[in-house]
Image (tube, rainbow, N blue to C red):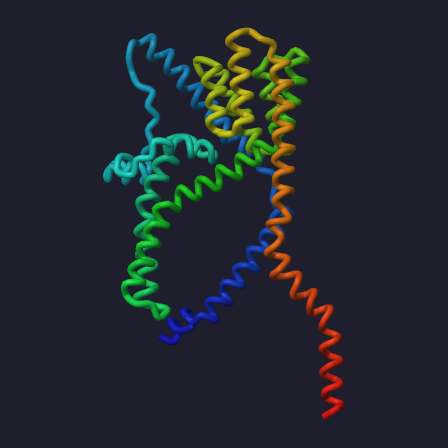
Amino acid sequence: MNLLKTLTDPDNLLALFVAIVCFATIVTIATPMITRSTLETRLKSVSSRREELRRKSREALAVKSNGGGTLRHADEGLYKKVVDRLQLSRLLEDPKVVEKLAQAGFRGPRPVSTFYFFRFILPFAFAVTTALYLFLVNDFGMPAMNRVVVCFVGLTLGYYAPNIYISNVAQKRRESIVGAFPDSLDLLLICVESGMSIEAAIQKVSQEIGGTSIELAEELTLLTAEISYLPERRMAYEGLAMRTNHPGIRSVTTAMIQAERYGTPLGSALRVMAKENRDMRLAHAEKKAAQLPAKLTVPMILFFLPVLFIVILGPAVIKVQDMVAQNH
């Protein structure tokens, strides 16, 4: 009981929260100093997609010659078994789950099974954890009905937690790709105008842009693999636009599809698209700079003004206290 009381003491919980925040701050500051580049590892993971496309291409030729067969890639993990047994893919159906996972960098059937598994488990985990804490540990003086409502809130948060996580990962990935995309278009333009094929140019740019954005290097390497093994280049370009989900990249892929279809010069289209993407990146930076004064208002009021008042009024208050003490 003493241990339980110690663990549920608000002062101890506050101290634990402050310790976690301090530890996270130290880790955040120290991580860039000790983190190694993961470009090689990420590109190796993309090579598995290349091998899968190559395997499917060979199997497609074999199936075509034999007159039948299937190319379905099955996932036999634990999550897949649970999803199939409970029919979670139909119960918790999300028609855009594959697209969302691809935008976050998760490809293949296994992330889909993992997503549905945690979307089923987390609501119950959040609700049970909240109920155990509120009904057995510390009720914070709330009536029973309010505690039940809080448990339902935990249930709802658990249901939407996988979507929130995937959205955050996709947003960070998109920002990294978009930040380096105009520079990659300039490099691609130079490679194309020098006489390189589009596949060789994209592969070269993916190797050069890896120091700026590992995510973009991964996507370009995957684009090269899909151009090589998919039936049409249009499918590869549309796949890149779907995975990045950004208007600038979508316009570039549209221009490349049109150049491929109608035989128009690819260099001029890339030059125009590179300029538009640079202007778009500059406009985004200007928008963030314009929002900065409004975002700094609350921190200024909470942190800067009290310190400023202390610095200005502190000496005067000390002098008044000394004069009062002398008179008495």
